[in-house]
Image (cartoon, rainbow, N blue to C red):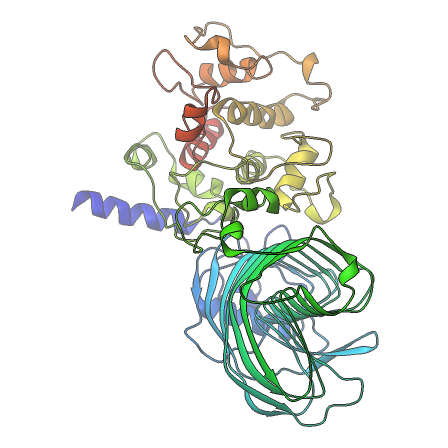
Length: 540
């Protein structure tokens, strides 16, 4: 019973997470935290908060930013989308790896003019506007439309129309009981339907769709795609995506139905895209199939293989736990993960050595309600390191003004950590955000936080000019396996009581064998990273 009480208290501590005490506008009172800015987004953990955010955006705050801190169940209530009419959403909506489940859409929203188009957007979002971003999100949706609509519509689980960026998202889609008549179609009008979005003139990358689209449509022109119904401007980009969508579309009009796209109207970037040949017989029904690069129809067995997961890129991983029926999963998503931690972590976090206020302040939203026993990724640790830097008195950077050379992540935490010299890339253009971090790398990044705060003039480029005092520390038995660049940081952190060895004589700096890699011998866990951040705050 005592352990259960401690666990409950620990859960409350983890959920508290108030980083600063500040006045917030009345419109933000219902959220778990944040002020809606890019650097301090609203924190959302309930369906009521998500609806409040929608109403805030549709009321005019179209650039408000939000981050989920829990899975949300909409319980099949008929959803009015975020970003209606001229208020297409232009903020950053970070799913943070969580899911919005039981979305139901059964009616069209109003439209917004975009060039020569009028978008009638239906989905979780109506329109993702230019500059808007939706990322790290799973949407589980049921789309049911019957009867007559006055105009053609654009419909998808994520959004009706995308003019911004959708990345590292997946959709479990179920179009059913769908029998739609468009009342007054024009000679140029078009109904577009896709697993992710109906019409795309923005960027979609590192996404996938599974499920089924089963519908009857009566209208002049229809474009249906497993990913996107219609894409039609030259700046369009869709890359590193796949669809395993069972397409059954009945129509008495002109239908364009493709495993990936219904229709492509102009040149863009369409790269590394694949569909399950069991569910469709083409990738694109109408238009620019010649624009596709490294795209293919593949068998189910091929799409469930480790080789295919590798082919999709570093954002994807093999479905080892069969949470996606064997198809590759996104490394950023939570899937079956639940809040958990180890006994040692509970004992230390609840013990006298940890100030609870500090502990709460150092947990970034990226780790709230997550399984803390899991190994921490490079991107996740950037969030911890930046949070630590700011809480220790470092100036808060404006992520909107920062950039990196990395093409494989748009993380604000990575941008800040890169600017501060806390991290660098794995190559000139890649960061590998989902690669697990080793204990020696963790020690090195924590030390860079210390240096950036305490050594005037220090930068990553001038690092060799600055020496750390770690005299008096004894060498570990596996000192020879600690990388040369990491040794000063490892022993400096050991001397100051921030980091400990795996045993009294060994440090476990990095994985040296295939076996060690398989068991995660030297991987740093999320809970280790958090406790070390707390120790550093208290001791340095």
